[in-house]
Length: 140
Image 1 (cartoon, one colour):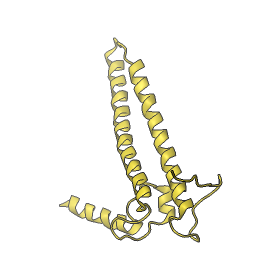
Image 2: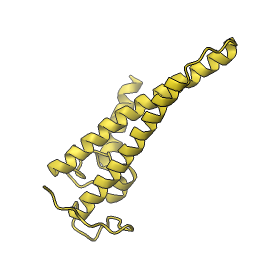
Image 3: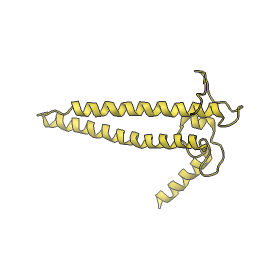
Image 4: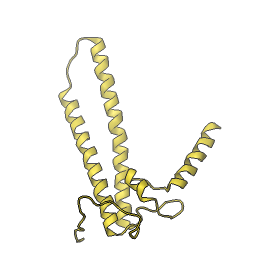
C-alpha cells in the first residue's frame, strides 16, 4: 500500500524542484481525480435530469426545443466521457512513471502546460508540429 504524500493546500509545482518528484506527481494525481469526480457528478446529474424530464409536451415548438436541448446535453456528456478516458490514461501514466513526458520526444512537458492541461501527452513544440501536420493533410 502506498504511503500518503503530504501536500500543502497552496502547493504548486515549481521549476526549481526535481521534475515529476513525488509531490508533483501527487499534485497532478489529485488534480486529475478532482476533475474526473466533477465530470462524473455532472454525468449523474444529466442522467437524473433526463429521467425526470421525460414528459409529454403538446406544443410542437416546445417539444423540438426540449429535444434540441437534450441532444446538446448528450453531446456534451459524450465529449466528457471521452475526457474521462483521457484522464484515466493520464492516471495510468502516473502509476507507470511516464506522466509528464512527451510521447513523441521523451522530453519533459512544461509544468505550466501540465497545470493548464493535465491530460497533455505532447510537449508544446511537439503539439504544434502535430497540429501543423494535421492542417497540411486536412487541406489536401
